[in-house]
Length: 423
Image (cartoon, rainbow, N blue to C red; front, top):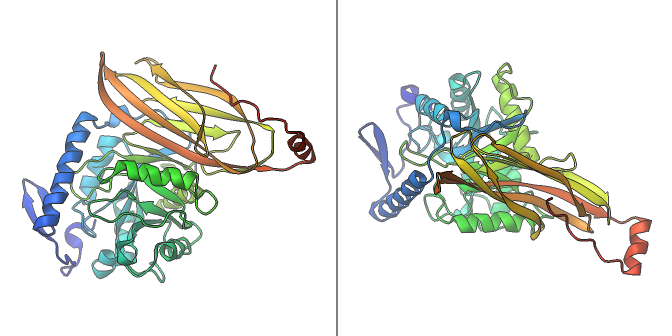
């Protein structure tokens, strides 16, 4: 991130770099290197099949929503991205921000946290915010966590590979008023590190990741966080590339509802708006930029509502395809705590990129329930599928509370009404 202005003693541990045609390649030993490059090659082939989005490709989202990569690495730790490379990615994907989440131990042993933060502020622009984040590994490699909204002066009482999963999450969340902690690549990133303990108080899960070793496991952990562990964690959906090198897949991102972010705002106001949205769980994870939003009444993702048991609650779905010349087919489903409420498949022509439905109605049931949306966008060039993009939105939490009327109905054995279906 600091480019050639960084200290000469920047640590590399067991890493060494070799420049080939302008790219920096990292080797971490023969066996790990072979596996790592095999995974990179697989992801590069997959991303060619799923064509990368471009500046004119970004959906036109509702006001207040901004798009960015929430997990990427720079040359402040073990990445090769310098400010110019990050600006190139910004132009390629039309992102508003990037959360640079370098490894805590390498930042502290090299540039130091204050210089790291200062460089991100210096290299930001009015329309593109470089936001300081951090990645920390649990003890015994039990998982990696991402910290957002960290203090600009440095982290307190957080050490790499020194905390259990639960202790690390709590330590990151205590760093300040905007601080939040997310699970990083729970299906495994570039190495064998997979998250070991579900439901331990985190704010969200990185479900979209460019180099995840096991996409199915990442999705399973997110779903379990939305359902089984809904009482003990927030399961906001996060997207990021986890890219370290210029040849790795990028374009994965997170839509954030951050209305305080604006071109006219100061850098600190912008990073606070980003951090506040992440802490509140107002997120949508997207593989390549497509937009899918679930609202329950007026509640955005991350909202917590209380409604009487057996009341009818309204929810809406909004789908927006990327702005390209490809026909889009979207297979979407709204789920409540693991049980589908409604869903269908819709077509979006090249001259109609947005579709919405609602309010649909569902009957409130007792206890804490999570509502979330999963949408699969398939883009067609003629009759042939050209690109795929999966989007995760939610959860929104609704607690059904007992009322005298509900208690009477329950004693009478009145069955729950059927779920709403799209008309």
